[in-house]
Picture 1: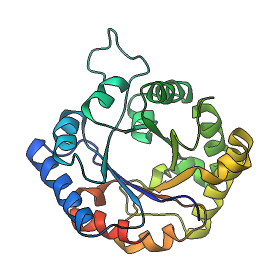
Picture 2: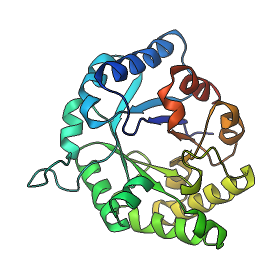
Picture 3: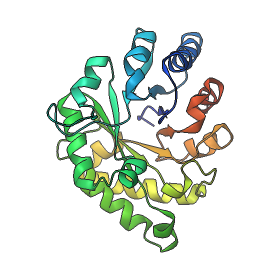
Picture 4: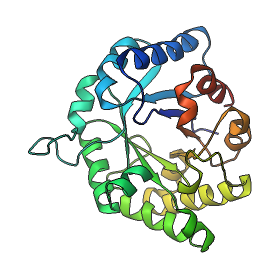
Length: 250
């Protein structure tokens, strides 16, 4: 496979500065001793992006943000602009996570605008898509995921500035995961949609991550699937050994 896997840790609303720095330094130390066959990324809360980026500077551990605003500046109290994340040392940003879509009512159009802003700032956008349990049970998984992909992917998306993360909403933080054939079906469908937008060669280079309770015990099986190019890791990314075990599964 020509696509190099990406193992990305989404720390969500966890870790004060000292905790975040210790966690990142622990992962960076593992990287210095042994290089897994994957790129590694941590996405801490905005409050500690700077501290974490400084702590791991010069290592092979990338740092990203968990969200950004569509505008590069302006009257948006409490928001973080993509250039601000870039300025702190981030190279990636997550956009469209299901928790943002649900808690903040973010539409595909909003997610697309945020991804566009990320690209303009020189960040790689990790665009999240995925169905709820009701949508899965209603047989609408491919319809929902396909619609989110089409609506959230900017026109300027390329395999170099964009990563797709498929996250079945009902599996995030629940310990439940789809079966491997179910994951393979959705990732294959996303790859086919990408071919229409990016061309066959572009689709072949696009990294599609799986997110939704990936952990050391199931990572190897999921990562062995042809169209799974890494993982967007939640809870397991908050423990050095668990995150490292997932990386080694590549």
